[in-house]
Image (cartoon, rainbow, N blue to C red; front, top):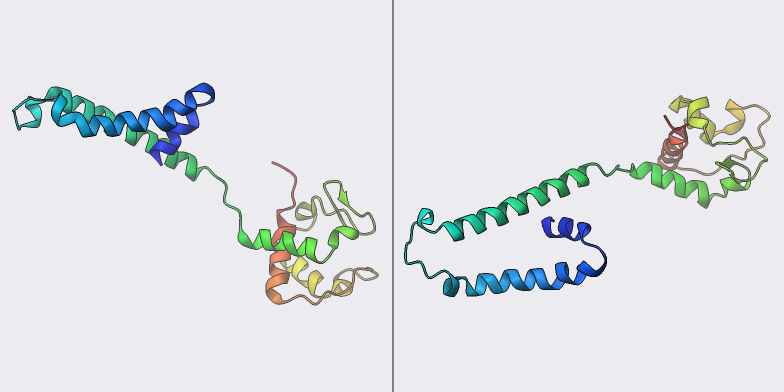
Length: 164
């Protein structure tokens, strides 16, 4: 992850340098290190060049790893039920009658901010089971939805809110 994070900062003509030259130099350095550092001492404190370069490398790795993990945690997580509800909305052709943010038909009510108008989960669950029982005179047909599909579609509807 640290190397991927490093590659995020390198663009344009420096990309080949970061993707090919830097790794090649690193592994060549590891390969030839015994020939370059001929110090006979065995204690790490007696080998300041090796100790400093190893410490600098590990510091770079851990800083880039920390930045990468921070960025990973900041990615918003999507609820799978909401994604399934959005798929059901498309699958059952709801956009033929309902509009969301300018897309879709105008026969039924605009659902762009239905989560603000109807924030009650129970209302949506009852509505998707039998639209006429909740909204008398509604022309919305009763769809053959399972309980899971109704829950997913309700979850999607409740996310349709004004930005805060």
